[in-house]
Image (cartoon, rainbow, N blue to C red; front, side, top):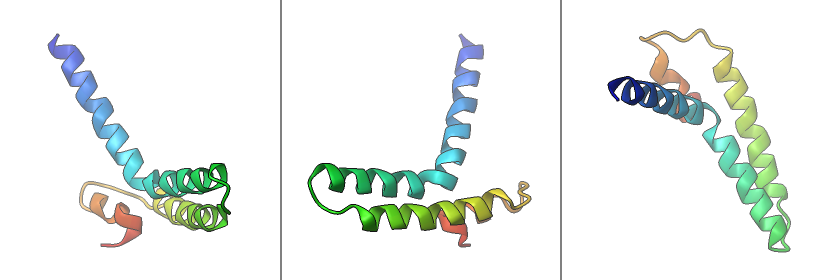
Length: 78
């Protein structure tokens, strides 16, 4: 049972890290799709998703370690 809890904790940490890098992109894409389904133009949300994905790519290319890990969140802002 303890092993499963440790594995679950590691998966949760990995999910949080991935979402901190790509979360804004996902939120913007969902917002664009929701507007399109509602009959409105989702161009603004799609454009925001493209901008966020560019920032996420920049963050993903950085060499991260324990001292610089927090620099990758919040769209690369310190």
